[in-house]
Image (cartoon, helix red, strand yellow):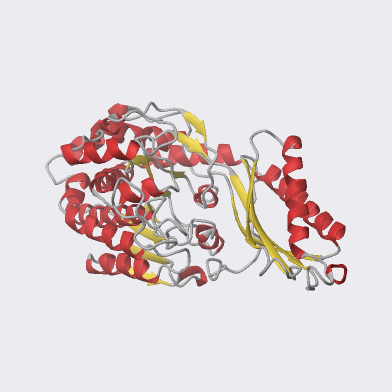
Length: 476
């Protein structure tokens, strides 16, 4: 048990005292700003690479090279993942970690233009902004290193290169390998259409590929001699869709048929459907996933085919830490939002015409959203990390207000100056919060007290994906 009593959010006066102590030297935000061109160059390279999960060789190497040039000791290939890495500078306590993601999404290639214009039709694109994520986190880590050295502050800064967040659960394998066990606080952020440091949770998530095996035959002259694997998939999907009426309303179940056969005149010998199951509670996700498995078995039995399934990934919900989140919110309000140039405003206005619904108003990128406690419906492998060490994150307006994640509009804004402005704000915020933590051990102690209270005394971590090895080929 860590020492310290959780008494709620740490006040603004403590933050100001920490800032005054180092007022004469360049601030961490200043150090980020001095490297803005390098940060934009890294982000642009990653945006152009647009590599899928566990295949991010160029992206990972680009970030590692920048860290090595800046004096970090870099260990590649951690947790049996070729594109994962840990970069370390300094020694002793506290150990502050920053997560860096860099994988893209399939099929969302897009030029940095406000109308649909794929660079390569069907190719991947950074529709969740992880190119900005990776660049900002590395830039912040380098700024923290320079700040520690200039001010002769003891402690360790680590940047964790975490691949395959999009369905690959890269951080779960890093968690299982014990890479966060001696970290005092983990920091992360995410591209967004708003500036927001609210204490937010997410849904837990478990996914699986359900593979059905039938018997091929001529679909016209001998259909009775075949058994359709696609019938098994369709029977499963039909029953899951009926199941939606009888699950908690905050559940989510979605699927894609990844293989439905080869030709209409051949009874499909093989078919596959890929499912995600989500709910805010881990135990409920386990129950719902087992119900989906039972439905798959029933679909196979009813259509006379065989079924096997493979768990692909599983994530815990993010365990919020209000102590840390309120301190991050204070720093974000000191930094503030940012305005658009005339060209950026024209880009944003044109892009917003393509939206279904408007969402936040244009101009909200200049402000910071109210601090709230929020339950989000998305999922992230940050969740598993957050049950291992106190973890805090935030979002900045790298996208035009109103932009949904996983859209071509997110790719477009993330490839031009709007995305870069939001990215630089995120890097500054990460660096400022890290520096604050090095100066305020009481904040770390209070964060740990809250962490242990929320997690509970009997908690034992058990990955939702079991003991499987990283699915390095899940995007092939």
